[in-house]
Image (cartoon, rainbow, N blue to C red):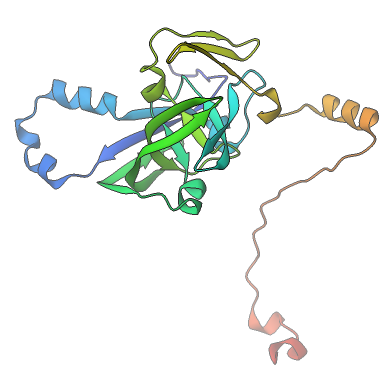
Length: 226
């Protein structure tokens, strides 16, 4: 809608298949089939999740992959499951070739991707999850479990206030979110109050600097010879 600004921005990831055979047969497909395929290939995760900032009501838990502890975000707003590229590489996971595809970010930038990690075994609070994951650069989150996993659970009960999720997998199980794993923006007033109460802190500012071109004549002779 013209002039409308969303309060909570999201990062949309559009997977664009780059398959030559599909291109050759594209003429025989109907517009309806193309629209359905495009809709299925759209994955959406919150921008804050990718940048590492998540509100206090976000469902984050600790999990384990191959005896390594990971931070897991359970996100019903994500249509796919994602794994941090750093975790994938450090654990030496096999990346199954899927052909090239484009990943379109919410900013409109397109990055090329390739492959999927299949059959990754993740353990959460005694629950074993075996899913396929797309590699993606993530912030403080190692794993994102989206609707690809959630829709296989059947009936579930979630209390976002207490960060408690009840599901039925071999009997009734419960997943308790860890509020200590969340990171969120803080107002200046809250920051000052925290410093007053706890007695210390750090203020870090990040600025982008652009250096101006320097002519050779402006460089001192003593430096030019170095």
